Length: 143
Image 1 (cartoon, helix red, strand yellow):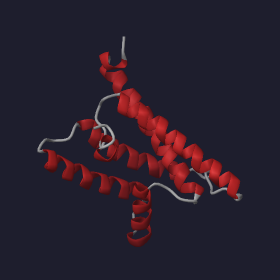
Image 2 (tube, rainbow, N blue to C red; image 1 turned 135 degrees about the vertical axis):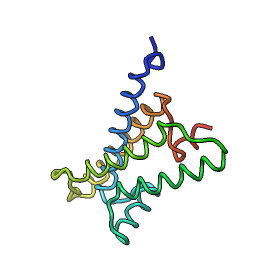
Image 3 (tube, rainbow, N blue to C red; image 1 turned 30 degrees about the vertical axis):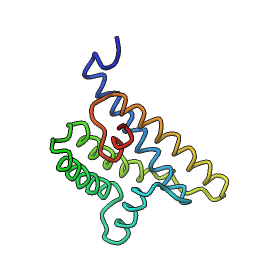
Image 4 (cartoon, rainbow, N blue to C red; image 1 turned 90 degrees about the vertical axis):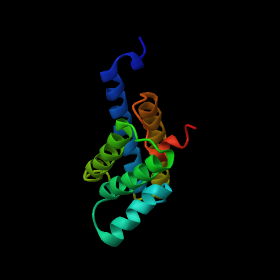
């Protein structure tokens, strides 16, 4: 039986994917040698206007979701909305873990950012495969 046949399993897989993806995002941010453009936007706004990186992730995600819904003239799926909110909350949760610090040595920083990229990829693959709705930033890769 495929995971698409069991609705609650689809949501569990999606959540685990979002959990992994948000951890990978935090690894890339914490490595402090560069991160994806969306996260750089969230970090910049956090530094300029306050709020948390996760809060900015939610705000920007909801704006992109609303714009996408208007452009395609249909409402977004519930999973896309939950994705945005969940990832923002999880980013903030992961960011407060005291032992997640920027490594001292450049080689360790590179290892951390590469690990983050791998974890993000795995998490995205999981949550997208659950089929409950990707956010517009990720769903653009599916068409």
